[in-house]
Each structure stands twice: as C-alpha cells, then as structure tokens.
Length: 93
Image (cartoon, rainbow, N blue to C red; front, side, top):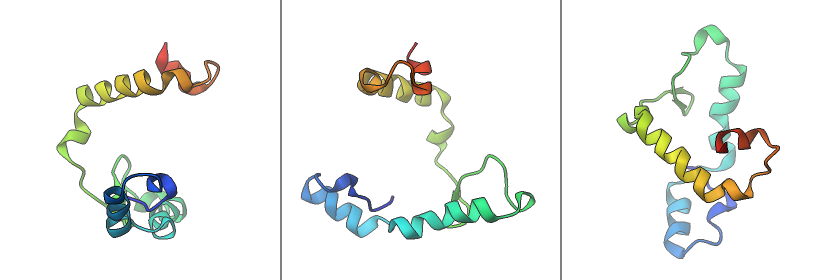
C-alpha cells in the first residue's frame, strides 16, 4: 500500500492506516524501476513482484470468477464516468 493523497479526505482511521502501513511513493516505485531496468532473463514472467523480488499472492488472486465479478462491479459503479470512445469502455459493451 502506498501513502498517497487518496486517503487525505478519508476518516481518521483510514489516514492512520495509510500513515502506519503505507510505503512512501519513492520507496514503492523502487520495484517498478527495478523491473524496468533488470535484464529480462533475470525476471520471472507472470509473477507478482514486491520489494524487488517475486512475492506470493493470495489464492483469491487466481479466482477468475471473483475477478469477473469484480470487473462487473467496477463497470456498474464507474461505467457512467468513462468516455464511450475510450479504450477503457470496450469492457462496458
């Protein structure tokens, strides 16, 4: 979790969670920089990286049905805000 301005207007509890558990944007971007700069043969395709190393994900992250339900929920909530000519709108059709 990255400490950003997203939680700025959230309640005090959310702000405390971001403050205590979140990484600074600079620290969190180190993994992305590592992935961009590292030689392709030193990386594992399809894996999740955190802190510059392959990290296990939860079993839920492989649940395609749950993923589909999540996308449907996102479509329901934000679909009306997406420009119909945007590539993002392709899923909404």
